[in-house]
Image 1 (spheres, rainbow, N blue to C red):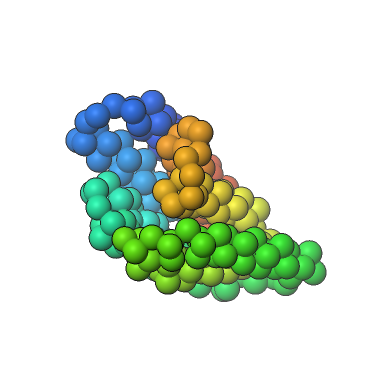
Image 2: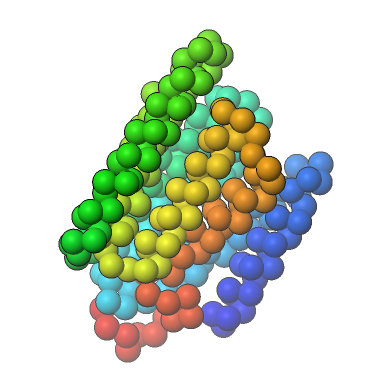
Length: 225
């Protein structure tokens, strides 16, 4: 059953990627939200394995706020974009809270905070330069800054868990959101839509997989709790 669910996630995600340039709102709504619905199903039916039930609950909650953010971003307009940003921000806070329950504290993980902080400072400075000179977008500076800080913390905390699925999912999320923001506020990125959604769906899938430590293990009640 798990293989079928993974197959449906991949298939519906690929349909969304293949139809990004099609001018059809119903098509985008269905095939952007359906993969996330299936990923949430995968997460809900996953056994925590060596993680805790608290970790699972926090990850599932983060996924739910993420699909809410997806829905907001499907609606044109800066106000809806801000609401989508807020929904994803809350989702990242839940992801971060989940990671904090699994900190293992490897030295390499703590040292990884240095390049993450430097990257966040660079991104924040670049967006400050762009957004504050545009009166119509200046109100997005503070929300964007908060988002950069939170996703940086989420990525760092994921590295500190020692969970390769969580770390890879968080990294892909940073890439996806960086491309999205750069493409929207700084300059066009070639094949931005494809790159954003490919890394986004992959990020969410790996975060769901971090619950059991596998994308193939689900409701196995004999797994350790």
